[in-house]
Amino acid sequence: MTQRGRPKSDTTGVMLRLHEDMLRIIDAERERRPDMPSRPEMIRRVLAEWAEKKIQDSEK
Image 1 (cartoon, rainbow, N blue to C red):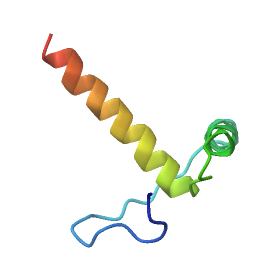
Image 2: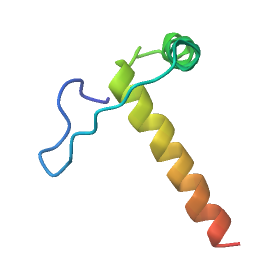
Image 3: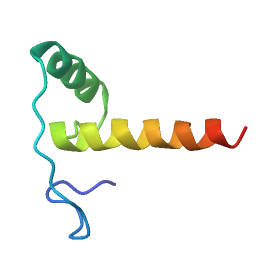
């Protein structure tokens, strides 16, 4: 189970502004998830999935 709240202290904060259309997409995906992650957590998950795919693609 993923914990909500602040991530581990070995991270760096990033200020990010997103267009309303992008926020709607993120919010729609959050609502599909059983644990309804926060916006920041959803963005972390999307980035982690993207990074994992990049790693897998580079190993081909």
